[in-house]
Image (cartoon, rainbow, N blue to C red; front, side, top):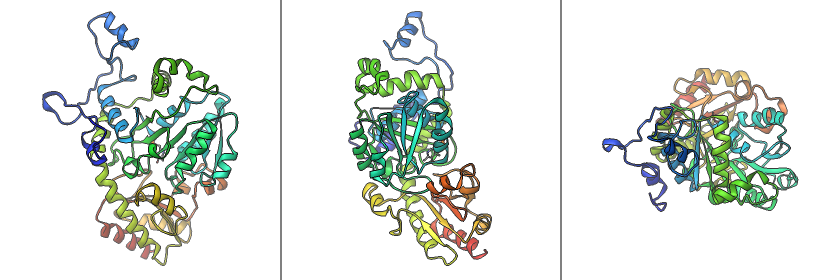
Length: 414
Ligand SMILES: *Cc1c(COP(=O)(O)O)cnc(C)c1O
């Protein structure tokens, strides 16, 4: 499928090959392994002399179809689908760093990523420096000889800060390290971050890509833009020799992904593939509804504050506008008088679901301080923009009048 189709068309047709008997959806190849005629055939596949399938942990036709589609959407040279967004982040990072190396990361992160960097990877000799990514001077100053990658989210979940990706890409280039971008919250629909300088893109496909909360998944997209022929990446040398521009993809797939085993189930790859097709339409409505709900909440007397990049009150409004074509995502946070009021509000909602997910057709709310960020101390919560009186909303695609009515009724009853 040619790359010059517009995104809305690519979402539907890109990378999708005709299925058996004229099927227009990708077949679910629910098989753990794949038989071959001769011993020589299988040897050739194992040695990479011939294309073919071996074992679903390594590759699977349904998952490969999803990977082709995801690579096309982001303009990457290849993609690896994983069992979850956390698996994608873990594999992307471990494909780059070794013991003794450092990650320079945004301090405004999804809680799971923060915990992975701070609590898990630190036990294996991989340290992370956390810096506010909007403070470019501090980011530049935090680069050391050991820095091997810069990690940032397109919109911090849940702080909803919007770092200047082109400026961070310039810092990464200067430092000779790749920029790894978690684009879960914006998706390729709001903008391809490759064009802003991302070298590696990661997604939790569980969110807007799936879109209906029916499957967990993740993806790593290699933009093919980083040159791994550097002294600081000696472990890439054999991969650069053999795979050239595909060195990262090859090391990630043939070593880290294969060894850690975080592969998706074929059924989930199918569900995620289905989700891609409606993503542009959903995102348009998700974003428009979020803007309307943010404006309603900002004008409500019981609401202390609203944080949404689409409001001019957001310190990141201009950056978001410039980077994402006047669309601001579908996450917002707002504050009430205190934690009790926040709980009261959540309990009073009838339409919005109280649960730990984002990116659904349904409107979702959560009280982050007592749930997804409960394990973090006050200082860390502040870095992530989490406070006791705060509710996070992932705005769905229901009729906006019904969403607003739901919040109005609940707020009025506090
Ligand atoms: C949800 C999320 C993740 C983790 O993805 P899972 O699929 O839940 O493992 C990572 N980054 C961001 C920004 C997320 O919202």
